[in-house]
Length: 277
Image (cartoon, rainbow, N blue to C red; front, side):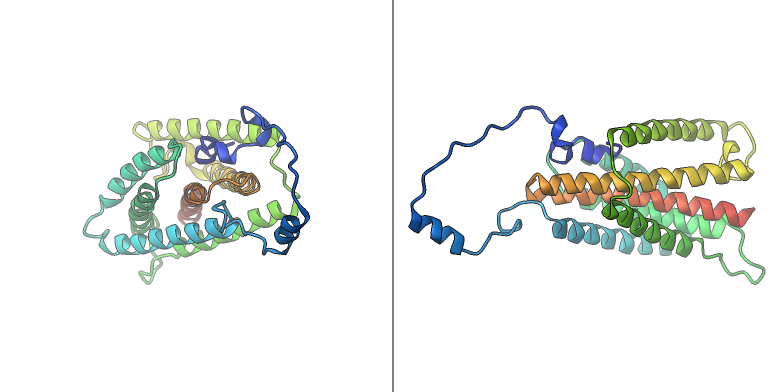
């Protein structure tokens, strides 16, 4: 799987790749009265039995997004006075992201703190892109690249979910391997671009992202993030079908937040590049 959040949690893996296997339980003899009572009793829901549900994932993802948005809005307001604040959010978010990604058991506190750190980073970097990176219009009005990036992220998320639910895009081993190779290649490209930016002139996004090549790289990154969303949906589906404990809804929500923040940042950079060109 592409997302380490799901890859490192055994409850979200492909059942065929899990170690060990179960054996069939021996048949038991149940008298007629007990059998009739069992059939007459209301069926237990996944929530009542402490299993992972889609509702839990939706609620926790929505809660983390709400925290992120509120913190981002507050950070946006103070960024003109504290322009370095987004760097702190990025570093703290990176550390908390790695800690949460490689934990076997989810920690709600650490996951919420990650959302706070990402809110600081997203709010600060969005303000900087809007007011410093992209030139304002002739009347001094900032260009709406943040609103465009948010709308594009929502639309892409909905499209990826619809494609996954329709079955038109299936997460096969070949699909997953292609995605991993593409992500490693994009990571290497980004690191090289960052290093070269210290030595070669650029438009502000690195020498490898100048002009049309930069736009193509941005579109490629958006496609990667959208593909990761589909893999995330598949991992959550496996967790629900496997009857994973309800606490792993936090892990699922965290994984979705990681991908959504990445997707938003790629759209933000892409729209900034379009405006500058």
